[in-house]
Length: 455
Ligand code: ATP
Ligand code: MG
Image (cartoon, rainbow, N blue to C red; front, top):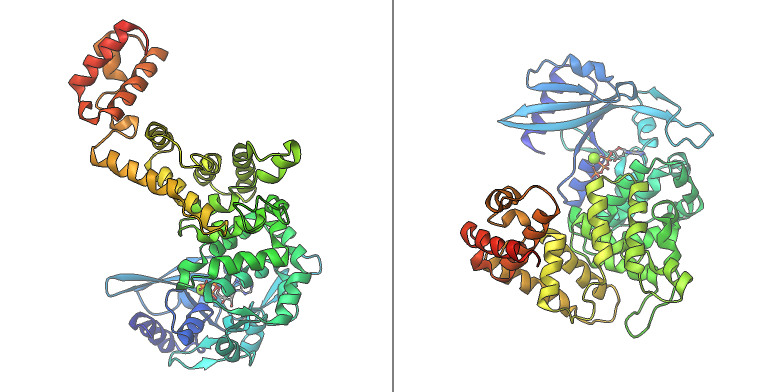
């Protein structure tokens, strides 16, 4: 146990409060030899009791005080540690499927507190000496068997978000879901319709990044397959399910559109925007094919559908815009015949970071098709970008040695369209000849263009 936690327990016991426990991720991961989880504390003492702890190094912040939760910040050897403390409690759920407890009642019975938790592996309690209490009697065995098992038969019906938490823990930890729990999840997946989009989004993001938590390489694909088998995508990204069973040209594809999308996502590197773009890149295929009998234009249609799906999940604007741009561009140079000039134009259009993501999406797209063909275009693109960087080429207008003000002043022209046209021409020129990207050279060139009056 880390020194700061030992110190916290010391302060706790000096205050004469009933025993305090670490619960949830910390004991579970300690038993599994895994690191990297937040610190959840619990005891029968109400959160008010923490205010009376005799230690200046502790600072409390209210959080859902009525539900017994408070955030504790501890200063220890020049570092700050954060714990979330929640008093033992039982949650009462109404019959309306509200998925949040109607009332909570505080208790001093650890068994009651354990019964309101989601999975038996998350209902283990570690005391100050590192001893483990397993009130459900099934948590330690579940850790040994590497299984996610609900605490009671009502667990998943009371709060359907737990269905996504189940998938997330299984994906992160590489655990199997206990069969009874799985059946319950399947039977009650409709409950996800009552869960707020923000809560759904937060769990979904964790599933998309499941491999980064503890290094379980198969995590993302396993998680996505579980969501598919449960029928959960209808409540997360419904448009994705339209590709289920939609066959594709077998010359290029081993899977139907939906399966290809899931595999493309799992093949993508661990960057949320790239993974979202990979998952959603073919959203346009089903509707475009239905309408035209062809796939032409599915990239543009897909960008619009991806935007709608992400906005529905309340993703921030920057994420939505970045993902849409990638989905819209995902067919660029598919046959690897684009000339250098077209590649340079794409780099300028997307910006370097997004362009590198597009290369990742292209590789993931090939990987997710299951045909084993290499994505040669992506390698070519990266090489083009590398060369441009080496020559210090101005990849964005900001890197150009002159700006609009310079052009207006030196050429004696008023603000307006012409300034933009000249800057655009200067940019194209400097990209082609990076050595000419100096104030003097560009202004000279600008004067030539301006007298010519076109270009
Ligand atoms: P990690 O922090 O590694 O993601 P964790 O198990 O600590 O995993 P938290 O979300 O931090 O998960 O929650 C702490 C504990 O609180 C859980 O282990 C579980 O016992 C309980 N818990 C959290 N959310 C729920 C929920 N929706 N329903 C039931 N119990 C929950
Ligand atoms: Mg936790």
